Image 1 (tube, one colour):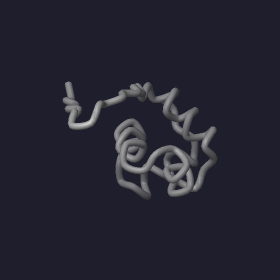
Image 2 (cartoon, rainbow, N blue to C red; image 1 turned 120 degrees about the horizontal axis):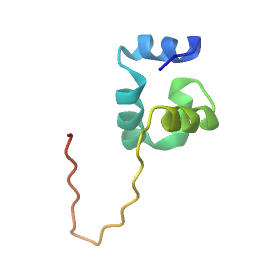
Image 3 (cartoon, rainbow, N blue to C red; image 1 turned 180 degrees about the vertical axis):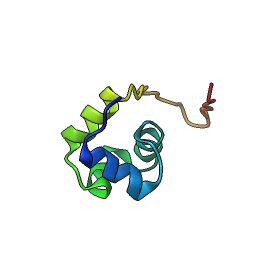
Length: 72
């Protein structure tokens, strides 16, 4: 997919493609801190996540429950 100058700049700064970087950052810091760290607006982060097909799932866990994720 074509990348804007801003997208390429972020990928170069983090040395990682956005499709890998975005889900990792979202899980580690959440949207507001992620947008701040990337130096872009929250709406830009949402747009990038949609554009690169990042799949968000919300899960509620009871006390003592855990969640495991696996890469395909």
